[in-house]
Image 1 (cartoon, rainbow, N blue to C red):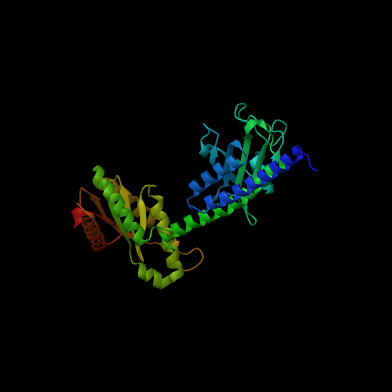
Image 2: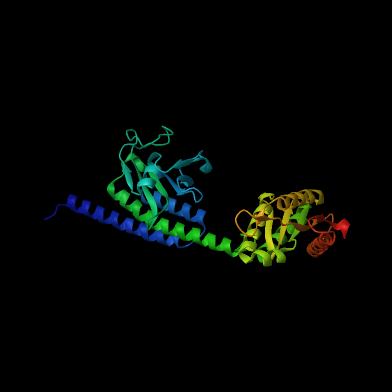
Length: 353
């Protein structure tokens, strides 16, 4: 007959396995409750530290612009370490090794492992840590690390297995969250130019105008229309015309600030909202756009043949030139027509109407 000590040990093992199954169930439930990436990452890291009875954890994700790099997206227990300062190449350190090899790793002694770059003698109170890649099929999403187990105990193979199981759930949830964010972004963008579409631009204008009214700050609206675009399109075809519009959108964005809203207003027209900008500032912006477009070689018939395109622009500002949304558009549109009447390739404002 099994003695009481052995029976208690078996019961403890079963209880621990049950607890870990509950952790996986609760993690899946947590991850299914949101598509917001930052909220999701914080939840999964908190649940992981609780499951592994640990104090420090981090999640690094692959840089979407440069897949050779990981950057710290969220962490717990690493107080004083700004997330945006932690970056590492694939292959660098333990996280980089796990990312490069796409294999989970249990490090028994961080002091003697050459892959580990120790940052603080006070931060790591245990010699052992576990790390797992975040993978969706064969695509690397990031890496999850856990260390500083309570009581200074080393991590075990079962700990690593649990981390791998959580990481698998987290990777799918992160991929879904990113897809959701990309879908939302695309719903706001014009498919050709990747500028704001008409509806989203109008909402941006309303939002910025409301802010300008509330805080008594200036705001400018610039309308841009391509001169003689139909003959260009007829001459070279729609493919070249689309390419020209994309290049023109890039030129406008190159003169814009991050706070500005740039939208496609029609087939061959654009609009820009400039927060915190008066009439003088709007004219400076418009003239820079005008010059950059006039100097740019646009696609021509074939090979190195290029064409010149120009734009006409109408400029208006709140509250200097217009008092409300309707006035803004009326004045800007009238100024744009004045620019067309003046011979095109120029900027006009309220004084020209």
